[in-house]
Length: 245
Image (cartoon, rainbow, N blue to C red; front, side, top):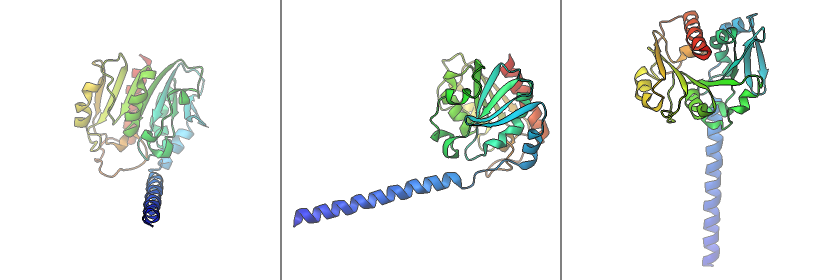
């Protein structure tokens, strides 16, 4: 009798833990789909109408390329947490215009740390390109740091590494926003020792965390004082010059 009772108790506890686990997984999955920040329609429409680039919704991601097909450099770009990948098309279009093929990834469950794919899962979108950089915004930048040893360069938008790259010879460009209240310039500076000595850190005056994409305002962020047009031009200039040198 005691053995039967013990088995019933163990079975009930086991089923209870299983139900809790299922509920936890379901809750996490639901959370990743709720509150995804959508791309703003006007900037995206403007980029889609740009005759100087092509935009392909490919299996590897959203691929931006110069319309003349003359591209020798590639950039894999990873979105921030729960941000629609299309929100980065407008700010990255200028880089594509200048000759860089850009692949904007679609992170699994809208969160970069759930996406375990290697860099080649994205560079396969343009196999003719030999030189690839990797970059990302916010949490996407943290993931980009993890993939950076397979790339030729690293670009960070309002982000910083949790991976130690200080002993590498990687080319790094880290862009911060003076009004960013999430990945603040101070936080980015504190993580500076994880980057190579040659890494270039630039603070963009007036930029907030959400200025690095086109998805509207973000909770907890600062208020930008730079216009979207100025921000796009600044990013195009800085990243374009960095990747082409």
